[in-house]
Length: 92
Image (cartoon, rainbow, N blue to C red; front, side):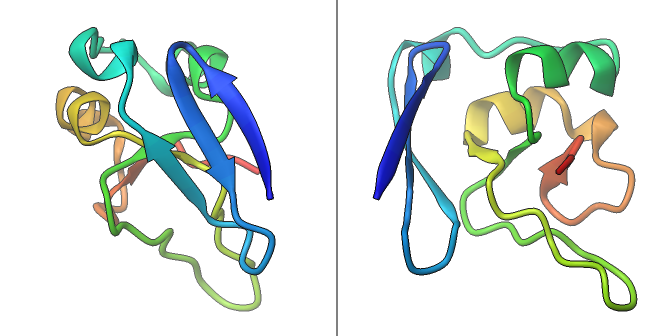
């Protein structure tokens, strides 16, 4: 199991699935609305999603599982979730 600190949110990467689990920290209180995915991905490299969200994909593409989980950040940026799967600006 590995961990990464992203703007006050500790993200634990699970060894058996590559999924991300976030432990609430200061970033939860300081949720920010981003203008576009380029701006959001500077802070959240693989995107941000709400708890329980799964990246929706087509064909043989593998879903992104290492996005940051933050209900408050996602709620302020739902306009950036084009496919409405609960993950905004998902990126490998």
